[in-house]
Image (tube, rainbow, N blue to C red):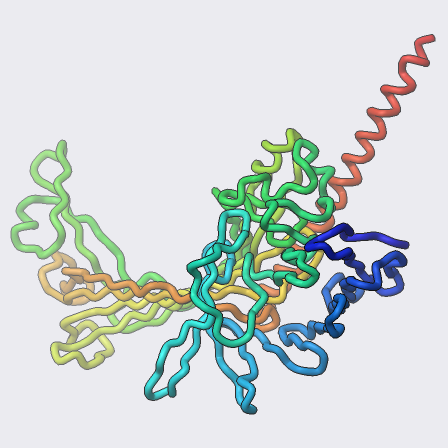
Length: 451
């Protein structure tokens, strides 16, 4: 069995690429300039061998997050970037900044010491919408040339091709076109099987080379949720009567049409003691009825899931006295604090049947502080209430973890949706093929039956 990713001339060189899938190898190749890929049974790339005229053969091996050239370790990934040997027996810890499309825009590290840090920019990348890198003003490269950039995927610079390896296919950002036909082209017959993101890379993404996905209006579905402890440490009650508002500290809320006075509200704690509560939610995010592709293809496509998430929110409420010391109950308190810490772990899933290797984690905190005052007009908690709320929120921090480090429940949910997406895509292709065959048969034979 033979198959070519493409052959032709680039930079005056006769070039070719070939792929090895277990026992399947390319039989035709140019021995002067060639590039060979090796994959395991699940389609994960294991090795790349490049032979180029006048240069030594270069072998790159992919051992999970560890990348080698020959027998030398080049780098391995971590949650915020990658680590590479510094050439002196140590390692440099490189941080990366990625934009919302997953493009690696900036790489930097501490060239000083932990006690006296000095930020050094290692590499800067800016991209046109289709992925071609800006030239002429990006910061100079310091250290190794990290070939992972557009979409976080490996840039294939060998043989002068300058393609990007996006899992299922090779992509040329200079053309904005794939170099291989779309494996799911039958689902998008209105479009060229070589187009990238329906020619609209601002709205659509194609993270694995299988099918563009919409970046807008995703549909969230809660799979399961549970709570423990006190997750709602405050409640709001409404009090009626203008006269009462003269003595109470509650927020006055006029309600016209109520004869004899106004409504006003009071905020009360749900418990007279400090509490802790935890809520856990698992959800999926998709495009509902996959309306983006449905609208573009004119056919009803199956409902796919783009990502799965776990959201863990810990709510801690605490009473403080006038000196800022913690107290157990409202009786001796002058202030009340509610802290909500939320950690959301998200795993992106495609339709190619491949389990992702990483997950993104977002952490955020929100703190609301109240004064504990009297005259609530209620006997609860000795007539005390919460007033003058002040809320401070921290900017969320984003990091990346290995898929294996996510919770087992989230891993199982991701694996199940990868499996379901692949099955739906396969069934859709099979059904569409049957319908097309049926229409062809009717077109060819129906006129003859009438004779």
